[in-house]
Length: 254
Image 1 (cartoon, helix red, strand yellow):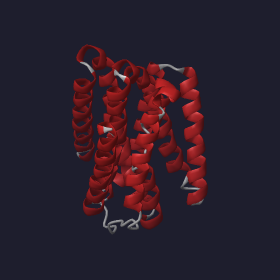
Image 2: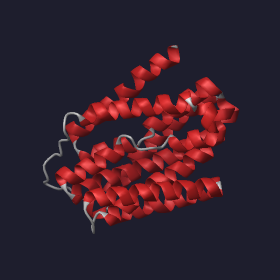
Image 3: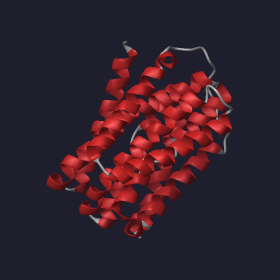
Image 4: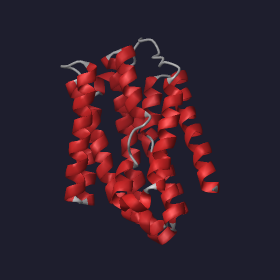
């Protein structure tokens, strides 16, 4: 029961903090923060606490396949949204997520998932290079109900995955971990309220954060067994945060 109440406390609190930071300091920071492995780290943490380190370790290949599917979603949306209306672009992007998730899980190769994810991340960062330039656009404000919905969605996702982990198995549990419950609504609302420029900033920030998420899972893959679950997760989160903000700084100087 202690773990259940911890999920109810920690998950919405983190979602609220990230959402408020994005509202206060703009879409660029919101994109970076939403790209961090917040939901992923929480899911891996509770899978480790409740199912054991071995189960969490087996979930990592599925998580990496899911990460490639998430980035494919953003890349497809970024391209398609320039040609069709937003609702249709959302449908096409979500279809791309499903297709990529099925393909990568069927292939089941960790090395392939990492390679595909890196290509997708690099493609997004290159395509959104114009959005990296400072703009005078007004700060995008999302409707008030969006933040509570993000908090609820993230908490329900965490509860659903961890409660059904034994039934889903490690691969499916891992694949669901990177679902962008913060970033995806943030990108769509930025597009609706601020246009393609603001949407591109969110997706770019999320892709930069995606490099940190990739590092997060690779550290877990290498450190989970020798170090144990909790130290490996702590080290992986620290690496993800440092890698994300270092990469953002390097890209800003270009």
